[in-house]
Length: 392
Image (cartoon, rainbow, N blue to C red; front, side, top):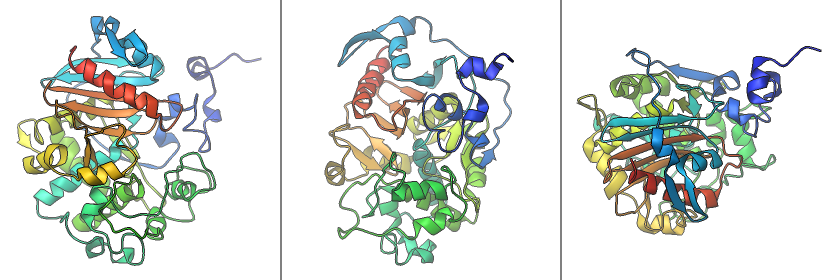
């Protein structure tokens, strides 16, 4: 009998065992979250060559203790317990260091799931600053085909702030739900290819409640945003990412975004990048939209996104107020409502981009948590990021 391949020895399963029907489940996610492009069609965004990056250890920081609800444990122990695959920390614009799990090579791309929403909103902010995109316009100004759907009488602002009165549930684990049909349309689940993402989106019904009243986390809104900015600009999302963000940012590695049968980008959750490049996005936001000596996104847009804008009342009516009791949501970024002015992007299975302006700290964490959503762990993660910000 033949021995195990190097792949099987490293991961404990064979590559052929990873399929569309299981790629988001453990143990397969420890490989698939780094290799989404082998499973789902993807568009690639090249980086500017600037030399190969070298790993930098977090050193003694890993052995320092943090106090969380369950007691005290070392930084490294918590990273392992929270299924971290890769981590990058910056302070004052400089790299503090990296951490990566044995199954994730340094410099490997990893899916960021719903932090993709936050990145897409940055594109919208750039286009708004150029006068190409109007955040206050009705959706139908750009997408007449949205008439008759939940988006037919919604504004782009409703889409950006996740307060469309949309009759849709994020039922991640229900194979018979509308959410499963949504994932087939994105080619993320078996059986896709008969209905495009856009065709699916514009069949979604609305609730009776007026738009704008309640924060409702609904991923289709962010795919609609991607289609909106493509229609407004006349360019594909992947091209916009390259021209407007990735090259100006000075990203060190290629990124990618999954696409559907028509090439429409999954802007709600399909982006993959390295932890360091994700941290660079957070640092740009901390610097008011600037990086590499140039203004990438307007400073006024960033200030509105991370500090000034958003409805506290709409947030309180939503289902995530337990995580950020004084929080708000604006332009697909979370204002955490803490004294530090911290803000973040969050993705399922443990993806985080945490920015603490007061401490000048940015933390990018990529993970393969077994459950899509783990409320108890999320509360611990917020406390962990706040504690870590005081330690670096």
